[in-house]
Image 1 (cartoon, protein in one colour):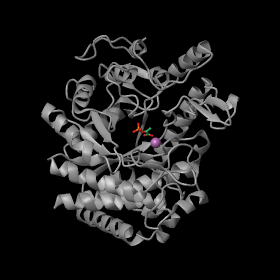
Image 2: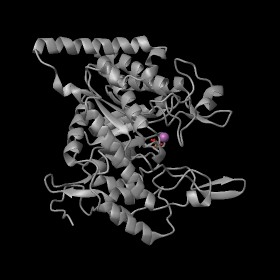
Image 3: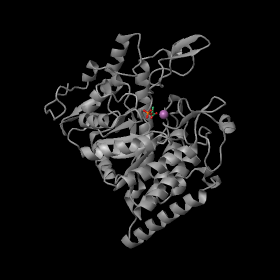
Image 4: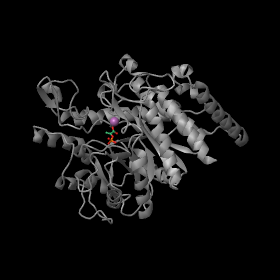
Length: 457
Ligand code: PEP
Ligand code: CO
Protein backbone atom coordinates (compact mmCIF):
# COMPACT_ATOMS: atom_id res chain seq x y z
CA UNK A 1 0.00 0.00 0.00
CA UNK A 2 1.35 3.47 -0.81
CA UNK A 3 2.07 5.61 2.22
CA UNK A 4 1.23 9.22 2.80
CA UNK A 5 4.70 10.47 3.64
CA UNK A 6 3.97 14.15 3.44
CA UNK A 7 0.93 15.85 4.90
CA UNK A 8 0.01 19.12 3.24
CA UNK A 9 -1.93 21.94 4.79
CA UNK A 10 -5.60 21.08 4.50
CA UNK A 11 -4.86 17.38 4.02
CA UNK A 12 -4.63 16.46 7.71
CA UNK A 13 -6.83 13.51 8.55
CA UNK A 14 -7.52 12.82 4.92
CA UNK A 15 -7.34 9.50 3.15
CA UNK A 16 -8.94 8.25 -0.09
CA UNK A 17 -11.59 6.64 2.14
CA UNK A 18 -12.17 9.45 4.65
CA UNK A 19 -15.29 10.49 2.73
CA UNK A 20 -16.97 7.46 4.30
CA UNK A 21 -17.29 9.37 7.58
CA UNK A 22 -19.55 11.94 5.85
CA UNK A 23 -22.95 11.89 4.23
CA UNK A 24 -22.60 10.84 0.58
CA UNK A 25 -25.42 12.14 -1.59
CA UNK A 26 -26.53 10.44 -4.83
CA UNK A 27 -24.97 7.02 -4.16
CA UNK A 28 -26.73 3.88 -5.42
CA UNK A 29 -28.02 1.36 -2.90
CA UNK A 30 -26.46 -2.02 -3.65
CA UNK A 31 -28.23 -4.99 -2.16
CA UNK A 32 -25.10 -7.17 -2.13
CA UNK A 33 -22.46 -5.11 -0.30
CA UNK A 34 -19.93 -7.96 -0.28
CA UNK A 35 -20.05 -8.21 -4.04
CA UNK A 36 -19.58 -4.45 -4.25
CA UNK A 37 -16.49 -4.65 -2.03
CA UNK A 38 -15.00 -7.47 -4.10
CA UNK A 39 -15.62 -5.56 -7.33
CA UNK A 40 -14.08 -2.36 -6.01
CA UNK A 41 -10.99 -4.36 -4.97
CA UNK A 42 -10.67 -5.71 -8.51
CA UNK A 43 -11.02 -2.20 -9.86
CA UNK A 44 -8.30 -0.91 -7.57
CA UNK A 45 -5.88 -3.50 -8.96
CA UNK A 46 -6.27 -2.50 -12.59
CA UNK A 47 -3.77 -0.13 -14.17
CA UNK A 48 -4.75 3.55 -14.16
CA UNK A 49 -6.17 5.36 -17.19
CA UNK A 50 -4.15 8.57 -17.00
CA UNK A 51 -0.84 9.66 -15.49
CA UNK A 52 0.16 12.30 -12.96
CA UNK A 53 2.34 13.98 -15.63
CA UNK A 54 -0.64 14.56 -17.87
CA UNK A 55 -2.71 15.79 -14.95
CA UNK A 56 -0.04 18.25 -13.91
CA UNK A 57 0.35 19.55 -17.43
CA UNK A 58 -3.41 20.13 -17.59
CA UNK A 59 -3.28 22.00 -14.28
CA UNK A 60 -0.58 24.29 -15.64
CA UNK A 61 -2.69 25.01 -18.70
CA UNK A 62 -5.78 25.71 -16.63
CA UNK A 63 -3.73 28.13 -14.52
CA UNK A 64 -2.88 29.93 -17.74
CA UNK A 65 -6.53 29.96 -18.74
CA UNK A 66 -7.36 31.59 -15.40
CA UNK A 67 -4.96 34.38 -16.40
CA UNK A 68 -6.58 34.74 -19.81
CA UNK A 69 -3.75 33.09 -21.73
CA UNK A 70 -5.71 30.01 -22.82
CA UNK A 71 -9.38 29.06 -23.15
CA UNK A 72 -11.08 25.88 -21.92
CA UNK A 73 -13.46 23.97 -24.16
CA UNK A 74 -15.17 21.13 -22.28
CA UNK A 75 -17.82 19.10 -24.04
CA UNK A 76 -19.41 15.74 -24.61
CA UNK A 77 -22.44 13.70 -23.66
CA UNK A 78 -24.50 14.36 -20.59
CA UNK A 79 -24.11 10.68 -19.96
CA UNK A 80 -21.99 8.35 -22.08
CA UNK A 81 -23.56 5.02 -22.82
CA UNK A 82 -21.76 1.68 -23.07
CA UNK A 83 -23.57 1.10 -26.35
CA UNK A 84 -21.91 4.21 -27.84
CA UNK A 85 -18.39 2.95 -27.18
CA UNK A 86 -17.89 2.55 -30.94
CA UNK A 87 -15.33 3.88 -33.34
CA UNK A 88 -17.52 6.23 -35.45
CA UNK A 89 -19.21 7.74 -32.41
CA UNK A 90 -15.95 8.42 -30.60
CA UNK A 91 -14.31 9.79 -33.76
CA UNK A 92 -17.20 12.13 -34.42
CA UNK A 93 -16.99 13.53 -30.88
CA UNK A 94 -13.31 14.29 -31.39
CA UNK A 95 -14.07 15.89 -34.72
CA UNK A 96 -16.61 18.33 -33.39
CA UNK A 97 -14.38 19.25 -30.43
CA UNK A 98 -11.48 19.79 -32.82
CA UNK A 99 -13.53 21.96 -35.15
CA UNK A 100 -14.92 24.02 -32.30
CA UNK A 101 -11.45 24.47 -30.88
CA UNK A 102 -10.12 25.75 -34.21
CA UNK A 103 -12.87 28.32 -34.41
CA UNK A 104 -12.06 29.38 -30.84
CA UNK A 105 -8.31 29.53 -31.48
CA UNK A 106 -8.97 31.73 -34.45
CA UNK A 107 -11.24 34.09 -32.51
CA UNK A 108 -9.24 34.22 -29.29
CA UNK A 109 -5.77 33.96 -30.82
CA UNK A 110 -4.80 31.81 -27.89
CA UNK A 111 -4.44 28.13 -27.10
CA UNK A 112 -7.55 26.13 -26.42
CA UNK A 113 -7.61 23.29 -23.90
CA UNK A 114 -9.73 20.48 -25.35
CA UNK A 115 -11.43 18.46 -22.66
CA UNK A 116 -14.00 15.76 -23.35
CA UNK A 117 -16.84 14.79 -21.09
CA UNK A 118 -15.79 11.29 -22.08
CA UNK A 119 -13.92 8.12 -21.16
CA UNK A 120 -15.76 7.74 -17.86
CA UNK A 121 -18.81 10.07 -17.86
CA UNK A 122 -21.11 7.21 -16.89
CA UNK A 123 -22.70 8.14 -13.54
CA UNK A 124 -25.60 10.57 -13.12
CA UNK A 125 -27.19 12.35 -10.18
CA UNK A 126 -31.00 12.13 -10.23
CA UNK A 127 -33.68 14.28 -8.62
CA UNK A 128 -35.60 11.21 -7.41
CA UNK A 129 -34.32 7.89 -6.11
CA UNK A 130 -37.27 6.11 -7.72
CA UNK A 131 -39.21 6.34 -10.92
CA UNK A 132 -42.88 5.35 -10.97
CA UNK A 133 -44.80 4.21 -14.06
CA UNK A 134 -48.36 2.86 -13.82
CA UNK A 135 -48.05 2.27 -10.08
CA UNK A 136 -44.76 0.38 -10.49
CA UNK A 137 -41.86 2.00 -8.68
CA UNK A 138 -38.24 1.09 -9.52
CA UNK A 139 -34.83 2.64 -8.78
CA UNK A 140 -34.10 5.59 -11.09
CA UNK A 141 -31.63 5.09 -13.90
CA UNK A 142 -28.29 6.47 -12.63
CA UNK A 143 -26.06 5.93 -15.65
CA UNK A 144 -24.53 2.84 -17.25
CA UNK A 145 -21.92 2.57 -14.49
CA UNK A 146 -24.71 1.77 -12.03
CA UNK A 147 -27.76 0.25 -13.71
CA UNK A 148 -29.51 0.07 -17.07
CA UNK A 149 -32.19 2.21 -18.67
CA UNK A 150 -35.02 -0.26 -19.50
CA UNK A 151 -37.81 -0.09 -16.94
CA UNK A 152 -37.54 -3.61 -15.51
CA UNK A 153 -36.61 -4.71 -12.03
CA UNK A 154 -33.52 -6.52 -13.25
CA UNK A 155 -32.21 -3.59 -15.31
CA UNK A 156 -32.75 -1.00 -12.62
CA UNK A 157 -31.10 -2.99 -9.82
CA UNK A 158 -27.67 -1.39 -9.18
CA UNK A 159 -25.08 -3.92 -10.35
CA UNK A 160 -21.48 -3.71 -9.01
CA UNK A 161 -20.18 -5.56 -12.06
CA UNK A 162 -20.99 -2.48 -14.16
CA UNK A 163 -18.23 -0.57 -12.38
CA UNK A 164 -15.72 -2.88 -14.05
CA UNK A 165 -17.50 -2.75 -17.40
CA UNK A 166 -17.49 1.06 -17.20
CA UNK A 167 -13.80 1.21 -16.40
CA UNK A 168 -13.06 -1.04 -19.38
CA UNK A 169 -15.22 1.09 -21.69
CA UNK A 170 -13.45 4.21 -20.44
CA UNK A 171 -10.10 2.56 -21.18
CA UNK A 172 -11.18 1.54 -24.69
CA UNK A 173 -12.48 5.02 -25.42
CA UNK A 174 -9.34 6.69 -24.15
CA UNK A 175 -7.13 4.29 -26.07
CA UNK A 176 -8.88 5.21 -29.30
CA UNK A 177 -8.80 8.94 -28.48
CA UNK A 178 -5.07 8.70 -27.83
CA UNK A 179 -4.36 6.86 -31.09
CA UNK A 180 -6.42 9.27 -33.13
CA UNK A 181 -4.85 12.35 -31.61
CA UNK A 182 -1.34 10.97 -32.01
CA UNK A 183 -1.71 9.43 -35.41
CA UNK A 184 -2.25 12.31 -37.78
CA UNK A 185 -6.05 12.45 -37.58
CA UNK A 186 -5.79 15.80 -35.78
CA UNK A 187 -3.22 17.20 -38.19
CA UNK A 188 -3.95 20.87 -38.72
CA UNK A 189 -2.46 20.60 -42.20
CA UNK A 190 -5.36 18.34 -43.15
CA UNK A 191 -8.64 19.64 -41.74
CA UNK A 192 -10.40 17.38 -44.25
CA UNK A 193 -9.51 14.35 -42.07
CA UNK A 194 -11.77 15.58 -39.35
CA UNK A 195 -14.22 17.70 -41.25
CA UNK A 196 -17.66 16.17 -40.96
CA UNK A 197 -19.56 15.55 -44.17
CA UNK A 198 -22.43 17.82 -43.27
CA UNK A 199 -20.33 20.96 -42.69
CA UNK A 200 -21.21 21.97 -46.25
CA UNK A 201 -24.92 21.98 -45.48
CA UNK A 202 -24.53 24.00 -42.31
CA UNK A 203 -26.19 27.39 -42.89
CA UNK A 204 -23.19 29.15 -41.30
CA UNK A 205 -20.59 26.99 -43.08
CA UNK A 206 -19.01 30.00 -44.77
CA UNK A 207 -18.11 31.56 -41.41
CA UNK A 208 -16.54 28.32 -40.22
CA UNK A 209 -14.62 27.71 -43.42
CA UNK A 210 -13.33 31.25 -43.48
CA UNK A 211 -11.88 30.88 -39.99
CA UNK A 212 -10.26 27.53 -40.80
CA UNK A 213 -8.89 28.89 -44.10
CA UNK A 214 -7.22 31.82 -42.34
CA UNK A 215 -5.74 29.49 -39.73
CA UNK A 216 -4.31 27.16 -42.40
CA UNK A 217 -2.90 30.16 -44.24
CA UNK A 218 -1.16 31.45 -41.12
CA UNK A 219 0.23 27.98 -40.58
CA UNK A 220 1.70 27.81 -44.10
CA UNK A 221 3.03 31.33 -43.71
CA UNK A 222 4.72 30.36 -40.46
CA UNK A 223 6.15 27.19 -41.99
CA UNK A 224 7.49 29.08 -45.00
CA UNK A 225 9.13 31.54 -42.65
CA UNK A 226 10.60 28.84 -40.44
CA UNK A 227 11.54 26.68 -43.44
CA UNK A 228 10.08 23.54 -41.86
CA UNK A 229 6.83 21.80 -41.12
CA UNK A 230 5.42 22.56 -37.69
CA UNK A 231 5.48 18.96 -36.47
CA UNK A 232 3.79 19.51 -33.14
CA UNK A 233 0.62 20.55 -34.89
CA UNK A 234 0.26 17.03 -36.25
CA UNK A 235 -1.08 15.97 -32.88
CA UNK A 236 -3.50 17.65 -30.53
CA UNK A 237 -4.05 16.99 -26.87
CA UNK A 238 -7.37 15.90 -25.52
CA UNK A 239 -8.01 15.67 -21.81
CA UNK A 240 -10.72 13.63 -20.16
CA UNK A 241 -13.21 14.64 -17.50
CA UNK A 242 -16.24 13.24 -15.74
CA UNK A 243 -18.41 13.99 -12.73
CA UNK A 244 -16.72 12.37 -9.73
CA UNK A 245 -20.01 11.10 -8.38
CA UNK A 246 -19.67 7.44 -7.48
CA UNK A 247 -17.19 7.63 -4.63
CA UNK A 248 -16.35 3.92 -4.43
CA UNK A 249 -15.37 4.00 -8.11
CA UNK A 250 -13.33 7.19 -7.74
CA UNK A 251 -11.59 5.97 -4.59
CA UNK A 252 -10.50 2.70 -6.21
CA UNK A 253 -8.06 4.47 -8.54
CA UNK A 254 -6.86 7.15 -6.12
CA UNK A 255 -3.13 6.74 -5.74
CA UNK A 256 -0.25 8.34 -3.93
CA UNK A 257 2.43 9.30 -6.43
CA UNK A 258 5.82 9.23 -4.75
CA UNK A 259 7.45 11.42 -7.40
CA UNK A 260 5.13 14.31 -6.53
CA UNK A 261 4.29 13.36 -2.96
CA UNK A 262 0.57 13.81 -3.59
CA UNK A 263 -2.65 11.89 -4.20
CA UNK A 264 -4.21 11.69 -7.63
CA UNK A 265 -7.43 10.31 -9.03
CA UNK A 266 -6.12 8.39 -12.03
CA UNK A 267 -9.44 7.52 -13.68
CA UNK A 268 -9.52 10.93 -15.35
CA UNK A 269 -7.54 14.13 -15.73
CA UNK A 270 -10.27 16.37 -14.42
CA UNK A 271 -13.03 15.14 -12.12
CA UNK A 272 -15.75 17.61 -11.19
CA UNK A 273 -18.19 17.93 -8.29
CA UNK A 274 -21.79 18.24 -9.43
CA UNK A 275 -24.18 20.95 -8.37
CA UNK A 276 -26.10 18.43 -6.25
CA UNK A 277 -23.15 17.03 -4.35
CA UNK A 278 -21.11 20.11 -3.42
CA UNK A 279 -22.28 20.31 0.23
CA UNK A 280 -19.40 21.71 2.27
CA UNK A 281 -19.75 19.02 4.96
CA UNK A 282 -20.56 16.24 2.49
CA UNK A 283 -18.60 13.21 1.34
CA UNK A 284 -17.77 14.55 -2.14
CA UNK A 285 -16.04 17.68 -0.86
CA UNK A 286 -14.19 15.52 1.66
CA UNK A 287 -12.97 13.18 -1.07
CA UNK A 288 -12.00 15.93 -3.52
CA UNK A 289 -10.10 18.02 -1.00
CA UNK A 290 -7.28 15.47 -0.80
CA UNK A 291 -6.75 15.13 -4.55
CA UNK A 292 -4.09 16.93 -6.48
CA UNK A 293 -5.99 16.87 -9.80
CA UNK A 294 -7.38 20.11 -11.14
CA UNK A 295 -11.09 19.92 -10.36
CA UNK A 296 -14.32 21.53 -11.46
CA UNK A 297 -17.21 22.63 -9.25
CA UNK A 298 -20.62 23.08 -10.84
CA UNK A 299 -22.41 26.02 -9.26
CA UNK A 300 -26.03 27.08 -9.52
CA UNK A 301 -28.44 29.54 -7.97
CA UNK A 302 -28.75 27.75 -4.62
CA UNK A 303 -25.15 28.62 -3.70
CA UNK A 304 -24.61 31.58 -1.36
CA UNK A 305 -21.49 33.74 -1.87
CA UNK A 306 -20.16 32.87 1.63
CA UNK A 307 -20.64 29.19 0.95
CA UNK A 308 -18.63 29.49 -2.25
CA UNK A 309 -15.73 31.13 -0.43
CA UNK A 310 -15.84 28.39 2.21
CA UNK A 311 -15.86 25.72 -0.50
CA UNK A 312 -12.81 27.23 -2.15
CA UNK A 313 -11.00 27.43 1.18
CA UNK A 314 -11.74 23.76 1.81
CA UNK A 315 -10.83 22.59 -1.68
CA UNK A 316 -7.93 24.89 -2.45
CA UNK A 317 -6.48 26.10 0.85
CA UNK A 318 -3.21 27.12 -0.78
CA UNK A 319 -4.94 29.06 -3.55
CA UNK A 320 -3.06 27.12 -6.17
CA UNK A 321 -3.69 28.46 -9.69
CA UNK A 322 -5.25 25.89 -12.04
CA UNK A 323 -6.68 23.81 -9.21
CA UNK A 324 -10.27 25.11 -9.39
CA UNK A 325 -12.56 25.70 -12.33
CA UNK A 326 -15.95 27.12 -11.36
CA UNK A 327 -18.52 26.01 -13.91
CA UNK A 328 -21.60 28.20 -13.51
CA UNK A 329 -25.02 27.12 -14.71
CA UNK A 330 -27.91 29.38 -13.80
CA UNK A 331 -30.19 29.69 -16.82
CA UNK A 332 -30.58 32.73 -19.04
CA UNK A 333 -33.16 34.41 -16.82
CA UNK A 334 -31.28 33.83 -13.55
CA UNK A 335 -27.64 34.48 -14.34
CA UNK A 336 -27.87 38.24 -13.95
CA UNK A 337 -29.32 37.77 -10.49
CA UNK A 338 -26.84 35.25 -9.09
CA UNK A 339 -23.50 35.41 -10.86
CA UNK A 340 -22.33 38.94 -9.94
CA UNK A 341 -22.35 38.41 -6.15
CA UNK A 342 -20.46 35.12 -6.55
CA UNK A 343 -17.79 36.79 -8.69
CA UNK A 344 -17.43 39.62 -6.16
CA UNK A 345 -17.09 37.26 -3.22
CA UNK A 346 -14.33 35.30 -4.96
CA UNK A 347 -12.56 38.54 -5.88
CA UNK A 348 -12.81 39.88 -2.33
CA UNK A 349 -11.42 36.64 -0.93
CA UNK A 350 -8.50 36.88 -3.38
CA UNK A 351 -9.15 33.36 -4.65
CA UNK A 352 -7.74 32.36 -8.03
CA UNK A 353 -10.20 30.41 -10.15
CA UNK A 354 -10.97 29.75 -13.78
CA UNK A 355 -14.57 30.66 -14.62
CA UNK A 356 -16.42 28.58 -17.20
CA UNK A 357 -20.00 28.84 -18.39
CA UNK A 358 -22.28 25.81 -18.69
CA UNK A 359 -25.27 27.24 -20.55
CA UNK A 360 -27.06 23.87 -20.64
CA UNK A 361 -28.14 22.83 -17.16
CA UNK A 362 -30.06 25.98 -16.20
CA UNK A 363 -31.98 25.98 -19.47
CA UNK A 364 -33.65 22.59 -19.53
CA UNK A 365 -37.36 22.59 -20.46
CA UNK A 366 -40.08 20.06 -21.07
CA UNK A 367 -41.59 20.32 -24.56
CA UNK A 368 -45.36 19.88 -24.94
CA UNK A 369 -44.62 16.54 -26.61
CA UNK A 370 -42.92 15.34 -23.42
CA UNK A 371 -39.31 15.56 -24.67
CA UNK A 372 -36.74 17.11 -22.37
CA UNK A 373 -35.20 19.88 -24.46
CA UNK A 374 -33.23 23.14 -24.40
CA UNK A 375 -33.77 26.23 -26.46
CA UNK A 376 -30.67 27.25 -28.38
CA UNK A 377 -31.58 30.93 -28.09
CA UNK A 378 -31.55 30.72 -24.29
CA UNK A 379 -28.26 28.82 -24.39
CA UNK A 380 -26.61 31.50 -26.51
CA UNK A 381 -28.10 34.23 -24.35
CA UNK A 382 -26.60 32.73 -21.18
CA UNK A 383 -23.17 32.59 -22.82
CA UNK A 384 -23.47 36.17 -24.03
CA UNK A 385 -24.58 37.40 -20.63
CA UNK A 386 -21.71 35.53 -18.98
CA UNK A 387 -19.19 37.43 -21.07
CA UNK A 388 -20.88 40.75 -20.22
CA UNK A 389 -21.13 40.08 -16.50
CA UNK A 390 -17.51 38.98 -16.13
CA UNK A 391 -16.23 41.89 -18.20
CA UNK A 392 -18.35 44.37 -16.26
CA UNK A 393 -16.79 43.22 -12.99
CA UNK A 394 -13.20 43.07 -14.16
CA UNK A 395 -13.37 39.27 -14.16
CA UNK A 396 -12.92 36.92 -17.13
CA UNK A 397 -14.90 34.09 -18.68
CA UNK A 398 -12.22 31.54 -19.52
CA UNK A 399 -14.16 28.46 -20.54
CA UNK A 400 -17.23 26.90 -22.10
CA UNK A 401 -18.84 23.68 -20.86
CA UNK A 402 -21.42 22.10 -23.17
CA UNK A 403 -23.31 18.87 -23.72
CA UNK A 404 -22.95 18.00 -27.38
CA UNK A 405 -22.55 15.32 -29.95
CA UNK A 406 -21.04 15.44 -33.43
CA UNK A 407 -24.13 13.71 -34.78
CA UNK A 408 -27.13 15.34 -36.38
CA UNK A 409 -29.55 14.65 -33.51
CA UNK A 410 -32.68 16.68 -32.75
CA UNK A 411 -32.59 17.24 -29.00
CA UNK A 412 -32.28 21.04 -28.56
CA UNK A 413 -34.65 23.40 -30.38
CA UNK A 414 -33.49 26.42 -32.42
CA UNK A 415 -30.17 27.05 -34.14
CA UNK A 416 -29.42 28.23 -37.66
CA UNK A 417 -31.68 25.54 -39.10
CA UNK A 418 -34.56 26.52 -36.80
CA UNK A 419 -35.38 23.13 -35.23
CA UNK A 420 -38.85 23.27 -33.67
CA UNK A 421 -40.49 21.23 -30.92
CA UNK A 422 -42.24 19.25 -33.63
CA UNK A 423 -38.84 18.21 -35.02
CA UNK A 424 -37.61 16.71 -31.74
CA UNK A 425 -38.97 13.26 -32.58
CA UNK A 426 -36.92 13.01 -35.80
CA UNK A 427 -33.73 11.85 -34.10
CA UNK A 428 -33.91 12.15 -30.32
CA UNK A 429 -31.36 9.76 -28.78
CA UNK A 430 -30.02 11.03 -25.47
CA UNK A 431 -30.56 8.86 -22.40
CA UNK A 432 -30.45 11.81 -20.02
CA UNK A 433 -30.03 15.50 -21.02
CA UNK A 434 -30.55 16.98 -24.52
CA UNK A 435 -27.31 17.76 -26.39
CA UNK A 436 -26.36 20.31 -29.00
CA UNK A 437 -26.09 18.68 -32.39
CA UNK A 438 -23.20 19.20 -34.77
CA UNK A 439 -24.45 22.46 -36.25
CA UNK A 440 -25.55 23.95 -32.95
CA UNK A 441 -22.16 23.09 -31.46
CA UNK A 442 -20.33 24.85 -34.27
CA UNK A 443 -22.68 27.78 -34.02
CA UNK A 444 -22.01 28.27 -30.32
CA UNK A 445 -18.27 28.07 -31.05
CA UNK A 446 -18.69 30.82 -33.64
CA UNK A 447 -20.52 33.00 -31.11
CA UNK A 448 -17.85 32.48 -28.45
CA UNK A 449 -15.09 33.08 -30.99
CA UNK A 450 -16.77 36.37 -31.92
CA UNK A 451 -16.93 37.42 -28.26
CA UNK A 452 -13.29 36.47 -27.64
CA UNK A 453 -12.27 38.36 -30.74
CA UNK A 454 -14.13 41.44 -29.52
CA UNK A 455 -12.52 41.33 -26.10
CA UNK A 456 -9.09 41.25 -27.76
CA UNK A 457 -10.04 44.69 -29.10
C1 PEP B 1 -24.30 17.41 -15.69
O1 PEP B 1 -23.27 18.07 -15.95
O2 PEP B 1 -24.75 16.53 -16.45
C2 PEP B 1 -25.05 17.75 -14.47
C3 PEP B 1 -25.82 16.89 -13.84
O3 PEP B 1 -24.85 19.03 -14.14
P1 PEP B 1 -25.12 19.84 -12.80
O4 PEP B 1 -24.34 19.16 -11.72
O5 PEP B 1 -24.58 21.18 -13.13
O6 PEP B 1 -26.60 19.85 -12.59
CO1 CO C 1 -26.43 16.86 -18.06
